[in-house]
Figure 1 (cartoon, helix red, strand yellow):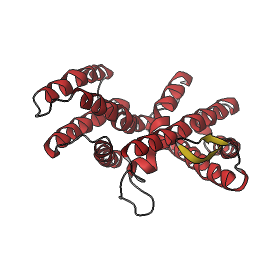
Figure 2 (tube, helix red, strand yellow; figure 1 turned 90 degrees about the vertical axis):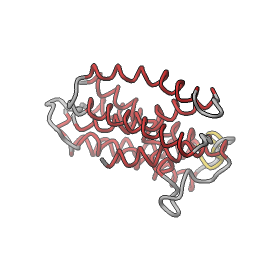
Figure 3 (cartoon, rainbow, N blue to C red; figure 1 turned 45 degrees about the vertical axis):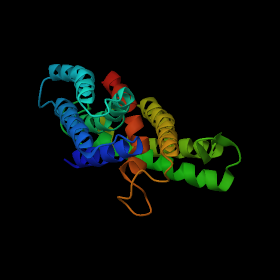
Figure 4 (cartoon, one colour; figure 1 turned 90 degrees about the horizontal axis):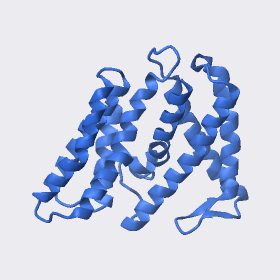
Length: 241
């Protein structure tokens, strides 16, 4: 239910940033996004059969049909809405799967917690490393403050965090090399996720995606790295198991 709440708020922020106008239309698209979230979540928690995932194929024609009967019937808005589902609703839905992504198939929080810890570790130490040693810009036209030194610092400390987590959560039965790859995948995809959200905000001409947390922005500001990294981590762990 917590991720469901974040999905609702995240979609609301996303549609505002991409100027999907019309309160009624926004509410309809958010409702569809929430249904998608619950569908993905229930499949991930093994509450319903994976065959139900085929319902996702109906998203495209349903959104087109809704847009067809709207006042503006703007085709470009269809793309924005569908992107929002893949950017917000599906990743939050997949996070529920992390409770079951383990060798014994028993509900556990180890993987999800490890995922969040590594993302936060990368975020914190990339910022600190960049602040102290940053000279070479990583992607200046999108995020002027990010540097290669910050990226390297974040990567180094996530390796350390991944190693410590491997000692703490032996129940996941991941080897040292698998934990290191886990860290690398997260650092790369989380960094791209952070840059992607910066691009989204630049296009919208805003500093923060929302004001849910004063001084920290909105849901997308807090989960940008996690949302982008989630599908990659999900696929990686699925292949290992």
